[in-house]
Length: 69
Image (cartoon, rainbow, N blue to C red; front, side, top):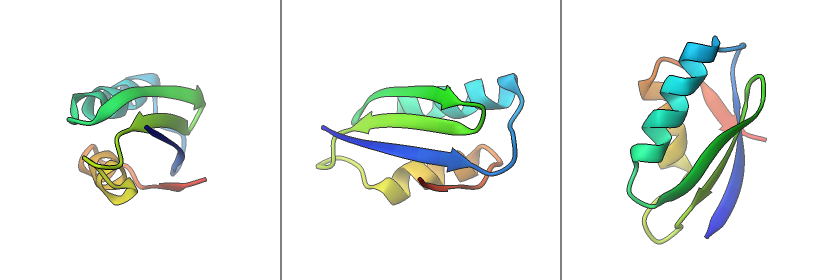
């Protein structure tokens, strides 16, 4: 398992952050996704199943921009 920290542009509302976390957790290969700050997410994932770009794309599909910290 790999771990990555993602920064979400702006400060998503609590509902927006929960939507992002739920979408990440649904991805096959994600073991855990949790908020570690107002606009920061820690994701533990299987690098054989996903790339960091897959994670960022999932955040973008929820209407937010993201990048690695």
